[in-house]
Image (cartoon, rainbow, N blue to C red; front, top):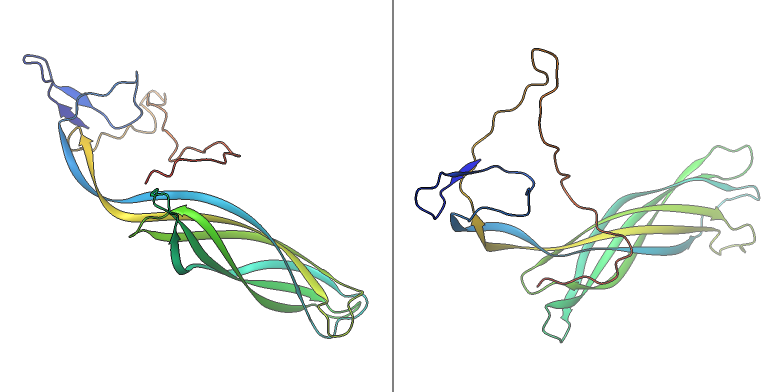
Length: 224
């Protein structure tokens, strides 16, 4: 917590405690400080549905796929960005997703299952708020389901997979921000788990570390 002197002479110091703002008002800041921070310029998600077929030799008439898992997912920015010519700082960004499918296949009735891996490369282009000097990172999660194609001719792909991916894209850069400050923070005294009488301490509820935005929102401000 910190103490903030009121601009009016004679008034007592105002104690500022970290936490939710109660009543919708804050005391007057004591100073404006420069903070070296990692600013988020864009933060969005995209879903992709892919279909890929492979040729796996020596599959019998009763072959089946027992399991499919996605492993070793990598995502990186490729090619130069193409700025959108409207002065907004947006750009067309090209990224490439590389993942490995790990399939557990029963080659035929009565045989032992085998494990097969196939690597898939998936390029995509997205429009992001990505002015010069920013970095694009992505986190990809996904699921897959595969089936054997019994009517495939010899040499043709005989296993087809449907892959659903969710990609979280984040555009960041190191910036120096001017931030109003109330003063330095000192550690508060932690309440004990229970008082001598066995009653729980009287403490305020903690706010969640993030706020979940409503789903289905198609438009958002770039904030460049």
